[in-house]
Length: 434
Image 1: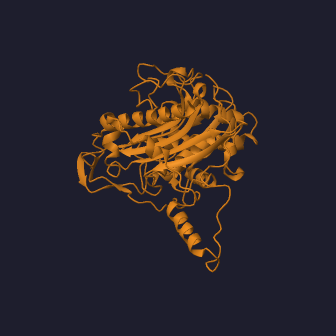
Image 2 (image 1 turned 60 degrees about the horizontal axis):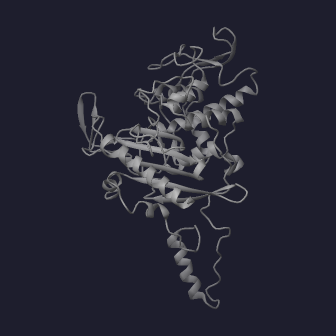
């Protein structure tokens, strides 16, 4: 795989170099300064000059895929966060962020996008343990047992080169093809207490992780985690570290979110239940937090030291490779291109397998798809043409308002929108470089 030129970013580019201090109202020209202050308040703390939002300019001339969503952004719960990246003469990149209907406290179900945070925090936990346990690494054999109702044990993994599960292989599966079981094993290893404490330490305060995926995980099962053991050999005779089953009895993160009741009705078993589906006990991750999580993996030096992941270079390399590879490029686990096309997990630009990426483009991303929500959180790079930017977006495609009926407009509205959105921003970036 071609190595990406991922240099650390300095600052987030959303503020000017100095804040503006208004003089006393009794000074000469007080009225002028007062008007300037009002202008700053209306336009946010970014800077005094009015800067046009290039994202809105990019979306002015609609394609069919974009138009029907942009005509009713509230109906589709649309949010977009675009980060322009520019490098100075020394090659150091700088951010400038722009949003379209960006509402960090408007709830959406993050689905599989949470897997990146779990993968990074699992590697971080293992790295800390390895300082005390010689031989412990992401490639060590990782066996999971069951200890509570609904839990399952894992001793074999046919996708692994050794036939045994490893934390590294779970990370690859979770990021390459968005494997749900892989995420669940990472959730069980780290545990809900450490997962949520990790989010806070990373500065992700509009997010929470409190259940496994695709197994109906809820209270009290989501509070119980399995016994996990690591071994030095494939025969699982040389024990390196054993983590007992655990129970988290503390409070879940309290987030001030709006719209955590979704839909007009929902299917429960074989019955249609009137009223919204309650997401207050489900995972949450704001769009800015998702992009910041991706930034923490790709550009760690851009963040304050206290908010960086505590990973080794090999850990970053594992995450970055799994985020950017096409499934067929992975030697282990291996994936059949007939079932996993190159853009299977690339919604922006690729439309979730609809079309290939533009020549020379590499996308480092994590997608999510559930309950009518579609999300992609991506860093796009075209080294030959000097293009790089971050783009994160979510929309909700559920016209009948019924959840769990598997009647969502993913193929007709969601994927075409994200495909065209990614291509619109990429083409605009190409024109800037020319």
